[in-house]
Image (cartoon, rainbow, N blue to C red; front, side, top):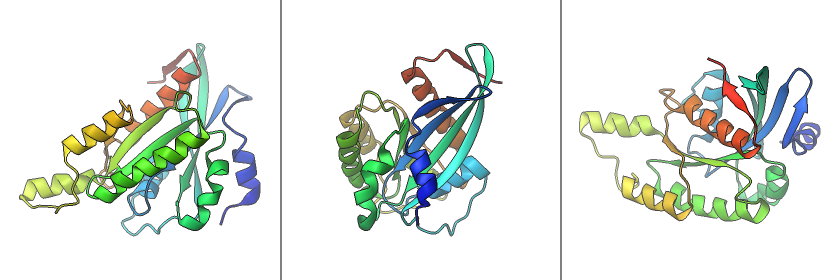
Length: 213
């Protein structure tokens, strides 16, 4: 269930400056259900992993904070993360869900070809509601640990494993430069991929910034 008061508050937050040099951004996670979007958010925000994560119904909200230097002052980037389950009955909410978005994580599973094919549909919906040149994106391929494990033991993952050429063609078709293979289980490329998206958002806002070591 969507908490209406929280949703109404967050939907207005694209970019704002709050007291004490705190900058707030809204980031949405798009992709098919059951491919690891919630696991990614849990690992990023809570440093936790659960193999038995329940399928997101409707929308889940997360928060993440990142210390940063902006205009030579210690600042804080505060991110609200919207994890959209994407079930058919909730798709009518998509325009409100995506409204005011600062950046988007486009997600598919490296061992699920259908999830990559379905991501084309998510791109179409996204660009019907936002200016593609004003909303930065990062593409994530989840479940990389399964590919690594299969490679180590000489096992095959079956026909749904997506080869590099198909991924390259997909990225080229959507003019995407930033792609990460990631694993929530192994905490691989989780914070790294998210920081790249934050950097792209700050660049889009023409902000003078530097990371805090």
